[in-house]
Image (cartoon, rainbow, N blue to C red; front, side, top):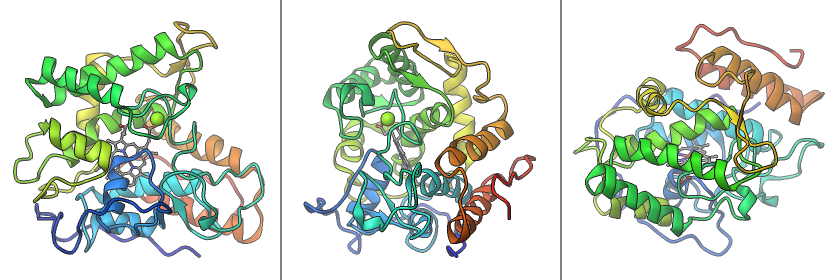
Length: 335
Ligand code: HEM
Ligand code: MG
């Protein structure tokens, strides 16, 4: 049985995290890195195993407990870590690659399970990312200089030279418009839809030095995190735990400035069509039940034995992140 996830931090103050015990080291040839600058950074500083193969508890520890990488809230870390292990990880070994598929996560459960690591397209990962291109263009996991340059341009134009809420909001809208206009397969549905807005808020809350905590990210720091997975020299983590409620507050502002509904292009550019069944931001509980009953179930239609037990346990741990809602837990596999 996978061990229960760690609980919340007791000391949530800002503190030096780029310290002597966690020096930056570029990944070695066999070390795996992927499309999440947060996890790449933690691995490059040794908060996560440098190899890039991790367990959910290690992820949550690295964010939340004694090793305290970024001071992400326990609920948010649970949500992300168990989304990842359920769709991209190996339930039989409790291991997840933070990048491409790897034999190091052990023998796979039967198909249609994918166990492809975080880079897997269209489960957790999706289109209109900040500094990574759409899968349609061939590489959806590497840092993309063109997109980063555009982020810099937006920060200069809307943020007075830093990545602030206005610049991030306008860039989120721009990334969506660009995908509509250039990617015939553009898909922007849940859970990616909600994730895209979250990833726009993260840099303002988690990459900004906790002594400053003004939601304004200097562009040289942005480049270090996004491109190199590196904390700036002397970096302090956030000065409070960044919970789902805090991220949600920013996400609401980002969304309301340009309220794009979930949908997709129809195999042609400029054919974006809203999907009326997608819960988007309007029905959080349907977002949860669709994730369990559709996304997870499509990978594990009829699990048996240990596989079923482990999936049920991970679904219970995932549901811990729904504590702040009044959604009812659903059970896609018999108990
Ligand atoms: C992107 C997973 C924690 C910051 C992503 C993506 C995944 C992911 C799958 C790709 C989505 C896409 O753009 O298509 C996770 C998991 C986490 C985690 C499982 C574990 C708790 C964090 C943390 C931070 C962070 C702590 C910040 C400190 C970001 C940012 C992006 C991103 C800024 C957008 C990258 C870009 O496109 O430029 N994450 N993440 N993540 N994540 Fe994470
Ligand atoms: Mg993406």
